[in-house]
Length: 513
View 1 (cartoon, one colour):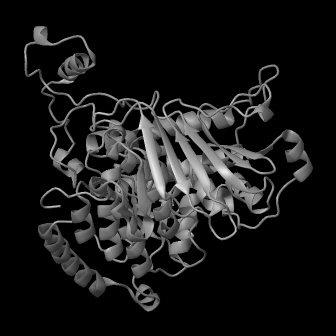
View 2 (view 1 turned 30 degrees about the horizontal axis):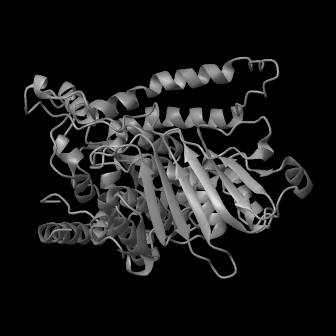
View 3 (view 1 turned 90 degrees about the vertical axis):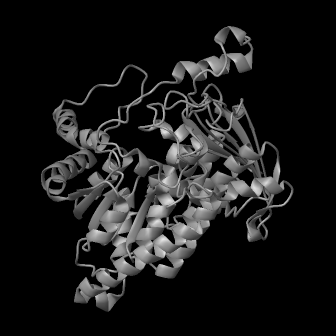
């Protein structure tokens, strides 16, 4: 953070905290800053409501949604307007006669009870919350002006997660942040520290952490079902078919086209020129607010909406998008801590757009009596070798994890779903592992956070844990940008063999941010 940014932030916090303290009602004051009586509903503000943020607000419709903030109301407004059509689609599906599965296919899974609850939430968000919630473009203005906010949901692009969450926590507000928790390792650590200092309820939006099946996967490992684990393989098909990566930044030709060769460099230069153009900023989008702490880059439709995930300025690629849903359970079950070395090998990387596919190799040290672990991450359609125990079954190409132990193997899908032991004979003979973890009522990740804010329970995935998981993910990006294997001193947050790689653990914020 720059000196100017620190001064502006202190000034902003001094003004807002002073005003907020004067308006705090007695029950909240008695319980302390940032806490509400269990009988109260939380007053929640959504920051970034056009994509996953809308899904979060649907799941929080039982609370008071008092403010909505988005830098692009052209896009976010259409997303909220689509609630009408989405409500009708879901209602039609609920009322339809269940479809018969195709021959030799498993039954189609559709939980009508959960779907009816979802429908009620969608209707409530559309009819009650959206019309009355105050709208903003700048989260700073919202936090400064609206004093009734108890908690915020941050579902912006990755590069703004930490800045917004820190500002909210400084004001004593409970915070739910979409995954990944932060854009940089330094930001993740700062979020964990601030959460501990403020004692607000925090949650990262990796909903699989609250799923029953994911907790069963962890319990299999804790029960010793596959023995000592020394090797883990985790994969996702992202970004294939989801957003572009491995593309050049749009840029006009600087030399005549006929002087370029038709080699890799020449083709990429032509592609950059083909993408270039003077695109007006869409109505409703505040591009400066979108950029936030990131460097100044001219607007282009290849960046926003959603495609920002594939660009290093704003996103952290496939591992940032899906690592929280896939690496999570191995970190959790094996208490892996932080790695001592990381190496990322990829398809061509231009430094601006993440590569189409990567391997990342992590080495984790021994923990007490638990042996060291080698964990390999695959994305872009790359897969580990299919275990012989699967027989004719193929690995789920969408994503999954394979943990290899001394007595067998554990395989699960994305979010920790469908955990099973290999070979099948081991799965059948072992049975269900003893339940060691509490189950989250209804598997409701957002409402678990609400209950934590009301003092009823502990958060499923608080920043204390989420920051460590996020750091593991982001170290894969650091190794990619370093271009070589890095050795990591976690205690001092320091790369020890490539000094320049330490620059990738943090970032310099744009002036005034």
